[in-house]
Image (tube, rainbow, N blue to C red; front, side):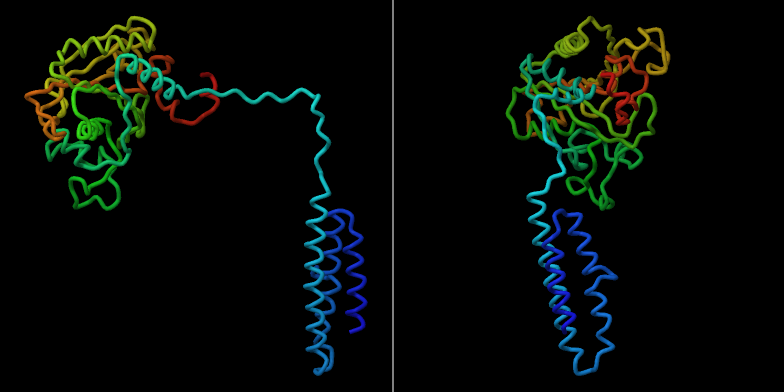
Amino acid sequence: MEQVEELKAAGLKLIADASSTAELEQARVELLGKEGKVTELLKGVGKLPPEDRREFGQSTNQLKKLFQGEIEQAKQTLLETESDIEPFDCSLPGIPPGGGGLHPITQMMYDLNDAFLSLGFEVYDGPEITSEKYAFDNLNFRPDHPARESMDTYWLEGADGKGGEERLCLRPHLTGASVRYMQTHKPPFRFVYPGRVYRNEVPDARHERAFFQYEALIVDRKVPFSSGRLLVTTILERVFKTNVKTRMRAGYFPFVEPGFEIDMQCLVCRGEGCSVCKRVGWLEVMPGGATHPNVFRAAGIDPNEWTGFYINIGLDRLVMMRTEMDDVRHFHSGDLRFLKQF
C-alpha cells in the first residue's frame, strides 16, 4: 500500500509537470502503458497473501482511474492553450481558388431552358423512378412491345409478375412525364422537361446506358405541323448561334401520330461523314410528332378538342455537335482532364 501511495504522489506530479501534449502522452505511457508502473503493480497482485489481494487490487484500480481522469483533464487544458498553427500574416497574398465551370451537358440544358423560356414555355421536372403505366401504358405502347423487355428497360427488383403502376422501373424516356403534367394542368400549355434516362444499351460512341434527353410539348386548340418544324429550327439556331441544316423524315413512335425524325447536319465532319454520323453526314437528334389521341385520353384531355406537338431532343448528341467531340462516353467518364477544357 505504501507503493500505491508513493506512485500516486509521483504520478500526479508527473502529469502536472507536463507542459505539452507530447509530454503528457509520455507520462501516460509511463504510468498506464503495457509496461507502465500501474500495470506493474497490478501484475503483482497474485504474489500477495490472499487476505491482502482485494484491498491492494481495489486501491490500484482506483489509482488507475485517477490517473486516467487527471490525464484527460490535463489534455483538454493543454489543447486549449497549445497551438501548432504558425502565426497568420494577413499581409501575405492569398492563394486563388481553382477554376471551375459547368459540365457541357448541364450548360446545354441551361441554354435550352433559356431558349424555351423566352418562347413562353414552362420548365417541368418528373421522377426518375416511374412505372409501366407511365412509361408505356399511357403512351400507347402495345402490350408486347419490345421496349417493355428487360433487354431495353431497367426494371426494379420485385417487378416480375406485376404490371401497371405496381411495376416500377428507371425511366427509359422522358415522355411519360408529359402525362403526369397533363393530368395536373389544364390546356392550353407549353412546357419542357429535361432529365436523365436509363436504357439497357451497349455503350459506344453514340450511346450510353444513362444519358440526357430534353422533351418539349405544346398543347393547344390547333397546333399545325409547320409550327413544330419552325420551333425546331428556332431552337437549334439559338443554341448553336448559326443556321443549322436539318431534314425531316417520317418515323414511327407509339405516342405520336403522325411521327417524324429530325436530323441535323453533323457538325463534327461538316456533313462529309464520320464515325459519329455513321459516315452519312447526318445525325438524328429529335424524334417527335403530333400527340396521339390515346395519350390525350390517358391524361384526361379530349383529343377532339385539343391537339399537341412533341419533340424529344437527344441532349448528349447536341453537346457532341457543339463541342465537335466524336465519342459521347467522354462526357460521362468523370475524367477531369477532359472536362477542364470546357
